[in-house]
Image (cartoon, rainbow, N blue to C red; front, side, top):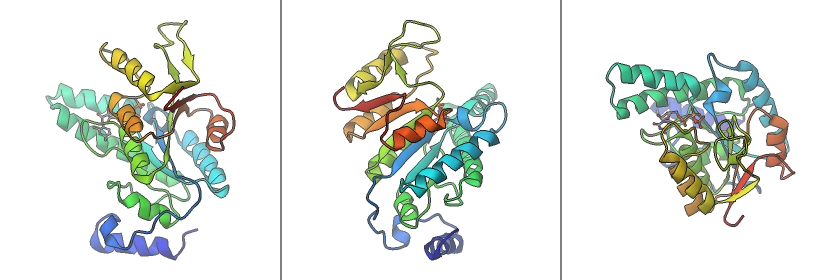
Length: 261
Ligand code: UTP
């Protein structure tokens, strides 16, 4: 299952008790034709009340199928409801925002480690360094991340990874894509099959000013997508065939984010 380069990286990182970094060896350019697809997998898909092994198994199978076709991935895993419960408990105990986020990041990494267990080509540790992603991809494995830094989100980590890798971005979430307002509150909300970075940013800016909004993306993630013109898709991760169609460039249900829509 793993080739020589896997063991080289693994042994290096074990020997130094560090994760692979850009300076821990020569970094080759990514040598496959297709751009890597960076996936932001919503925590709600991986774990709700308890971990969802069934979703992880099906998702891992789909990734394997797409990998066999030549698609390459880096994956970032979110926190979900468990994470929000930890944040609430920490706040009840008097934690400040920084500490609550640091705790939440640990939860995202637990979810990421869980996903790794199902994912055949995954590098076996949750990565904490964006630079390491190239090295892991070049060794024929999938880099998997949770959160990285208090104050941001896992969507933001995925946008930064896509920027660094020159890849594309897919947000697998639990809604079908971007709506003009929350479709649960407003049944007449308009669905966007395509939206420009500018329009998405203005929708999010308006929604963020209203407390209690459950947003499909946050503002910093969208600003990163825009500044590097990263092709992005937002879709429902529960429909894995639809997700596969998006990766294959076939018609899919979801929202494409691009420069002009
Ligand atoms: P997310 O909000 O990204 O996970 O991280 P999620 O639940 O999958 O998000 P949705 O489904 O897209 O809404 C959970 C929490 O972890 C902290 C933040 O507190 C965030 O709300 N976090 C995550 C960070 O502080 N830094 C990170 O880099 C990532």
